[in-house]
Length: 104
Image (cartoon, rainbow, N blue to C red; front, side):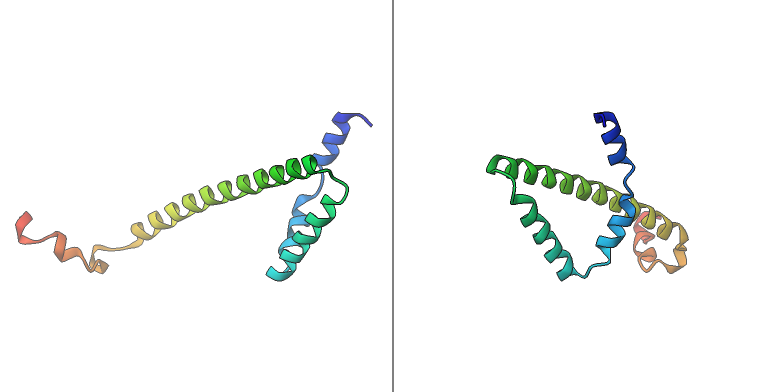
């Protein structure tokens, strides 16, 4: 098997099923599984390999968190725009403050 085929096989893995499986765990189970996987991965690795793999997994986690944070910001912006478009001036408790006699 050549490297291109191995990479294609890696890309074709059903990650959604795997992530749904992980998301079915409780918080405690999720932590325990993470600890076990980390422990088992380190058993056959030397210190440099452990550091390298650990840093790689940290990088993956940081990318996931950065993408999720940006998606959350965009979702919040869309929700605020939808909310402000659906409000009337009649429902605005500050309407009288901004339309005071000073500006007439």
